[in-house]
Image 1 (spheres, rainbow, N blue to C red):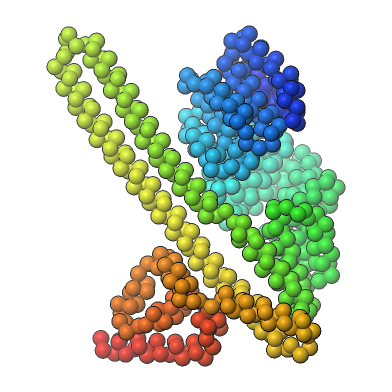
Image 2: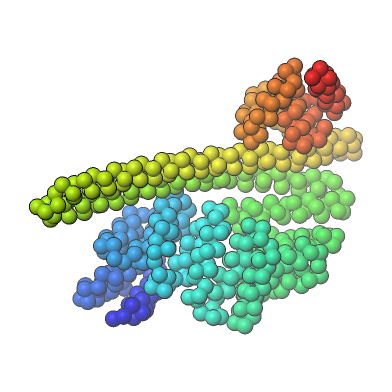
Length: 547
């Protein structure tokens, strides 16, 4: 059988039904004939396909990571362990990694996708069964960890193997547009969305027409073309509701509300938000959308001049934002990424050592065969070559170590910058809420006493957590010094008489915070901040005048 014939047979096998619920007897009854056929034909590839299907079926049966699925993946890998089927070895790693990724066990998924990626340049895509499916798995994973460029590479590699007007092709073009937008390549992103829409319209796929219309609406909103934006969003909602796509309908209604808010059509915006809430479920996935809705309701209340309602929605927004922050796995992802880098480093070293050992064995065998004729010459050549390979291996190990250390430092600095930016943004957001609470306190005579007490308690709590104590200052200073290395030390060197409070003020000024924000943080009045700045300026001018 030729290569194309083998690939077609494998693709047909891999498309076999694997969802039998929890009925493991049905799994064996349906799939075991494939194993019997593979044994009869002595086909390692069909046996590999059988183990792949069994792994998928048992992952569905257990609906989680489980030992039996892992065992079938390992059996599949053992079946092609001779190293001649790198394409199937690549797919085994992709499917094994995606199985862990599906159940969000990202730490265990990392090494499998890493190994699969190492095969990519060596394997001819045309020889791989179900290329779009497996490259789509790779793209999903790399997008999840934030490597959108790598995700786009796999999607572009997979598109030529999709049918002209298939849903898979539309999905891949749309996904490229999404990833480009996340990387802020707006022009290219819009072009891919338009191309995806053209394919969807030719295929008369109404669901995708609606989804892509919603994506294109964002670009029209950015340009200020609100009428066109509304037309695209309403088209999205119409198709989403007609073809029972509740998640897309929910997102589209939130986008519709945002557009109405820009047009100051408060009633229409509220109706859109009520519709969006109707699609909500009590699951962590919906927290982000609940936060967006709370913010939109706050904007509407502000536009209507309803300050008490605006404050309620802002408090909901802050509470949801806090919940999202607590659930954030950014730092965990960074740690996993470092583990991945470490694992890659160890794997590279092990590979280099293995190649070195194989090379030595090869030369030893040659030396034995030619020993009687070229003993002296062979020993000298072998010795020289071994020295060069040892030097090369040591140099490679050192380079890998340095690259790994640099990656750690870069990732740590990225986390610190994000933390400092989040601190600054949080201060500015909290200032707005604090000012609102102060206004409520100022006009408290018109409010219910119980509600006034709640406002006073909220203001006291926020101010207490807002003030930068000495302990918080020391923690903040460590992060600040990592993001702006040498800044505070340099200021102290230029102006030796600066106190710790002066340095604290300089750091907050570096973050471009307002006098009010600094006053709330330092627990002093705005006038005190202004006077502190004046004293600081005089200290600096006094030093400069003596230079």
